[in-house]
Image 1 (cartoon, helix red, strand yellow):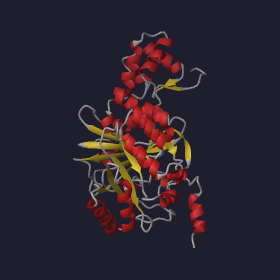
Image 2: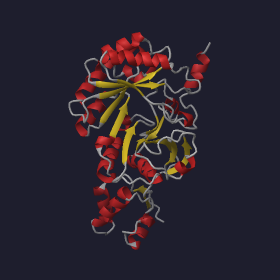
Image 3: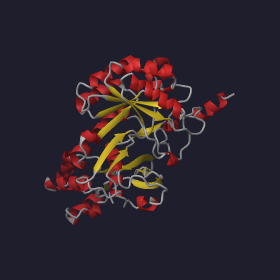
Image 4: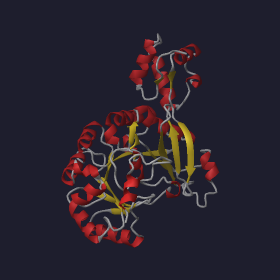
Length: 382
């Protein structure tokens, strides 16, 4: 084994893999074979790539090359068919990735099919994979459990893509026959890891075979990166709004102090000039007594009136010592009815996987509160 640092091939594009092959004295087409094996065939070990000569596979291993596919550390299976994965990278860091099937096999009912789901054998019409972009998150939204982690590090492009390949393999997905949607709504703020996120998107489109039209990226509102994505590869955009005015949004989403609502809404309108859809999705978590009154609904309708959008109301998913509670069903219904009556298409997100902490805002896993926020809340409590 070489003493050189380990090099993960997962994350290299065709040009990079071709250059690697040629630098090892191989013909250029060996790079294409590596590319197809890693991304299309989803092979996780160099020894299993039968299209490569054994001598070249041995050479790559001796040079300390590896594909670097993340491993499944734990699975948590919900009664509704959602599966929360804890995936582990080569350095031991972990993130969570969520599988949400729909159609036949998407509703597990009493959970009796959970064993089949764990083996990846259940059938589905289509599925959505919720992908993480960072280990933890730096944005510190007050209603998000993942914020308790703080940010540990960015994920590489290979680690972002690897989450998806790992789940596709676990569910034996045939991308030519089965529809997969991707939402970059897991741990982390994708736009604070923009270069790696963008490289991952290109690999997913060009190498894995998932088109941009099936991808949605969610952001807390990093305005300069919204403009960059519009120019680079405008996938569907979801913006975490969660408040109808700057004063409240400053409090529950500190990022608003840097990019206030007027700047954020202007960036949304610019994004729509090149977006694949003619609307932006605004996400709005419903927090009892915080942002859920009819007065808030009226402010919200006025705020977004000039921006083509759809509103997605999200029932808050409580976590220990958050200091926040979920709005009740009638309050959410009245809030949504008001917005729909004002001509704004508004839906209520179906909460999935909350029994396994896989619902929106719950992706923190079995971790310590590295921000000490829960301690500060507890000390401030009467």
